[in-house]
Each structure stands twice: as structure tokens, then as C-alpha cells.
Length: 170
Length: 70
Image (cartoon, rainbow over all chains, first blue to last red; front, side):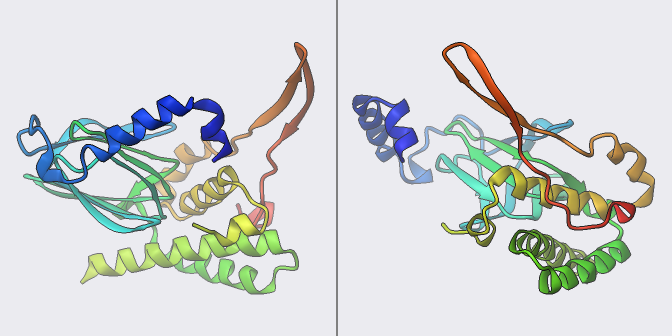
């Protein structure tokens, strides 16, 4: 909070608050996007999508799972390690991301930043199972708290990945 | 929002690199040579005072596997 107070003058902060309050529902959007969501999906080493038009994006954020359509209310969400499903006319494309941020702009442009992302078919299920049990072992047996928490982060990721892979098989 | 990893003294950079490394480990074998090129990122920082740089510090990497297994 002190960071915001330092960087924004009180008047600027007020202006920002009023602008945010001016639009709270998708139905109030100006509707310039013709029902399509424009996605930019970038990793530090690659741009996986650049101005790609889709109908819907499903992702799991720290605040809960969400599906985003065109003209979504502007928001920023922190992503959990999980699947992002890009649904377009030609079908659905699923990526597993290690975590990142999704930034929904007012003009139906959705920017997704992640550190690492793979398509589900590029994941080795056996490696997931082996690494999950190794991380689980470490999460219970590690001596120091930091290693324990680091292993817990991995356990959460591998469990989420495993359920995503088994969901695909059904 | 409170996170267990933050309570343990980790920052978001460390958290996100642990998760990214965990995901890289389980990619299919044929992708691993390409992935190895982007492994091991490092962040160094220094505090500048009066136009002079202070000592460089780095954000420590938290290991969860022995080097041989990585």
C-alpha cells in the first residue's frame, strides 16, 4: 500500500478509483470487439499467441477459476499452476502454465504472462508421477522450512498437472 | 491473500521459478535439450546511493533436488 501511496499522487489515485467505478459489468462495454477475445500469451522466451482471436479463455487464478469472454470487465488475476483453455471456433487448445498473470484490458484484449507453459501432450505423465512422489517425500522430510515450502509448491503443481492429464484421458 | 511460501520467507520470484523449474522437469524427453538452454536464470541487485553502486546481492535459488537429478 505504501508503494502505491508513494507513486501515485492522491488526486491521481482518486481519478483511478472513479474510472474503475465507472464500469463494473460486461454489459456496459462499448462492444467494439465483435464478440471475440484477442489474446496475447507470452513467455520470457517465446510468444505463444499474438493477437489471436478466441471465443473464451478458461483459467485458474489464485482468487478462483474463471472463464473470460469478450468485453470482460478489466481485471488483473494472479494465475495458479494450472491449465489455460483457449476455446476458439476451431476447437480448444490447452496449455499448462507454471503460474503468471492474466491482465484483462478494457478493449477485449487479454494479456497472459507466464514463466513456463507446455501443451498437455508435451508432458510426460511418468515423469509427473515420479517427481510428485519425490517432492512429497521432501515436503514431509526436509529439515528446513524453506525447502519444505519449495517442495510443497512443487507438490501442488504436480497434483494439478496430474488431474489435468487424467481429465484429458476421460 | 496469504501464502505459505511467503510466510516461509520466499518472494514471488523464487516461488515462480520453483514452479517453472518443476514444470520443465516433466516435459517430454525430446524437448529437454531445448529447455536446458533457458534453465538457470539469475537476478542480481544492488542499492545505489549518492550515484554509487552498493554491493551486489543475488536472489538465492532454492534447490529441491540434488544436482545429479536435475
